[in-house]
Image (cartoon, rainbow, N blue to C red):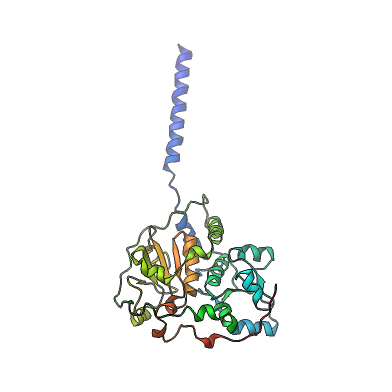
Length: 331
């Protein structure tokens, strides 16, 4: 009888311990990875030591400034992320051909430091903006996208900008003030990591793997299916008032609005967010950041230049941007 009582007592204690452990497990609240990530990227603990999106973004350098550096013998590392065929047909002397999604692996493999001056060049400045944003966020504080890409280097490469300026939607822009959505939750991320740095590294890898193709959208796609998108006008409020906006677009102030404690969480997590700016370059920078946070964000190609070109007084492509600098062919 005594042995039976001891056995029953042992079973009872074991059951209580298991129940207590299960209760402790159940009481553990899962972290919101996206919130941990944005708090990290906005903090002095981030790779750049500051909130890049709301301070220095975009990081652009003109073709003229690149040319000046090269003539002066300044130590500058140029990555050309166009196709190998187009690179072979003509590129800046000294540039190396790198796939857009491989820029981070490449700079690591080459042993470039966070202080090395890096210039990324594409066709129009848009894919390069997306790639440069990733490098900047990672801590490469001297990474730049060359404004207007190879289109501004020589007229032989300028057709991609010349053929994409348009007034096609100038009569469809609206002038009402559209209110932002209410603040909500951050996106759901499932990296399995717990610190901002760990989550960031996983998300950067995932965003680079999916490529800029997942992060861009044409104006035709947007206007054909306008109700499918939450459209962000990334201009100053005065410009939003002066030029009007894509139907339904909400104004978000550059270097201010896309912060966690300002308007970031007004962006929906259940709808594609389309960001447009003047040329599609700044929006490409911002889209890379939003995708790292987990938003389904896309940059509207060529921005206002591809929709209301003649209405614009500035912030526009013109052939005056073409510098006719020398280039080399081959690999």
